[in-house]
Amino acid sequence: MVSAQADSVAVEGKIVTEENIPDSLLAAQHSPKKAALLSLIPGGGQIYNKKYWKVPFIYAIGGAAVYFSASNYKNYQLFRETLISRVDSNSDAPDNHPQLTQSGVQAEMEKHQKNFELLLIGAVLVYAIQIVDATVDAHLMYFDVSDDLSLQVRPEILNLNNLAYNPHQFKPTLGLSIKLHIR
Image 1 (tube, rainbow, N blue to C red):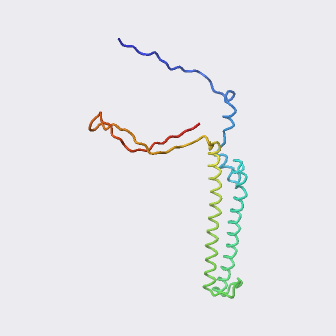
Image 2: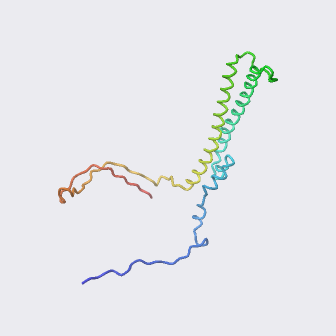
């Protein structure tokens, strides 16, 4: 005699519309794309993510990088003019540093040019990092970091069946047991 169970899967037809979606799901829509776009204005994404405390740091670090970059560029131009006035006798450029030798002026000019370029790269990095920060922060806006999460890792001796030699013989094996509890 052969018997089979009747189909036990039931499908409930329900149309999902905006009216029957719970408000808690609608409120959870926080766009990382919008955070990134708003970050094109420095600090805009952080304000969108309600991380207001980050904005002064962005402007302080970025502003300092831009200020010192501009200062080094100005010094680079002064040493460049001095070097030009010493090399070209027909130049109208003033000798701003008569106490320095020509090689000293050259070294100072190169130092300020290097500092200008590094600080400019730093300012661009601060700008890029604040965009990435706002995007990641928006992705993790509703990430659960409560105390209801736990992870236990402990060594455990497992009994594994060694089928290659004897199907009825169990062989103790050292392993690692991981339990994740989400309440």
